[in-house]
Structure formats: structure tokens, C-alpha cells
Amino acid sequence: MSAYVRLRGKRGALNNEHGFTLVELLTVVFIIGILLLIATLIYTSSVSASRRNTCKSNLRIIDGAISVYEARLESPPADIDALTTAGFLRKAPVDPHTGKTDYSIVGGSAYSDGGHQDYP
Ligand SMILES: [Zn+2]
Image (cartoon, rainbow, N blue to C red; front, side, top):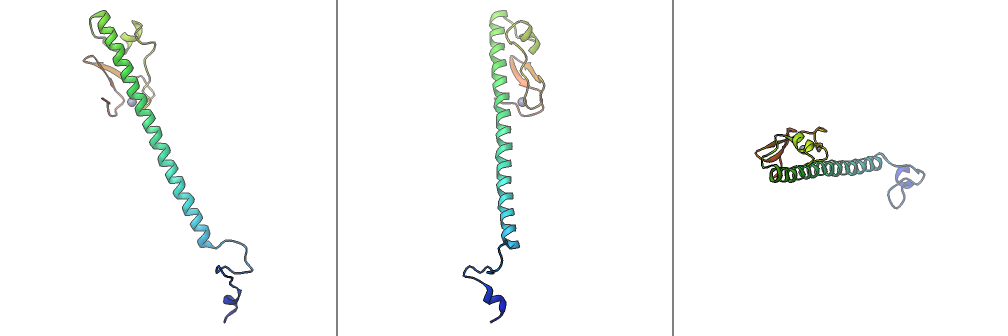
């Protein structure tokens, strides 16, 4: 029996060593990396969902203001500025995707001009 084998304990570690083996360290780094990847994916998807919901909410608010505008003035507004100047919107909502007031009115409905998918 060699000296290496005699030094091993019940769990296979050397009795006179108190550190970690390379395999143990790599395993911990791998697990931490997987956890960070999962956390990053959850964070980015929640931010994306939040922006999408805010954009939908903005479109609903603009559509409501358009309905009131049409009911009172009996013609559709030309653009968002017509809604704000007439007092049906306090201010033009900001598209969270672009950071600008990228909404337009086409055929009595609001649409986002941000170059992303429009929502029903
Ligand atoms: Zn948007």
C-alpha cells in the first residue's frame, strides 16, 4: 500500500489537507454560473414584460382619450398633440421601449411607432 492511499480518510480526502480540490472549486463555480444565468434570464424577461405591459397600458389610455375626443368634438384627433392640447390627455405617454412619445393615431386607434410589435 502506498503512502498516498494510507493518507486517505473515509471520504477519500487526504487527511493532512484542509483546502478544496480543483474539481470541487470548478463545481462550485459552475453552479454559481448556472444560478447567475438563470437570474439574468428571469430579470431580462421581467423587464421585457414590464415594458410590454406599460406600452399596452399607454395604448389603452390613448384609445380612451380618442373615444372621448371623438364623442365630444365629433371628429378624430389628428395626433397625440391634439389630445393633449384639447385636455383629453395631461401629457403624451412615453413608450418604454424607445423612451420617446412614439405613439400615433391611425383610423381612430393608437399605435406605437417604436418599431416593435403593436399590441391588440
Ligand atoms: Zn412600446
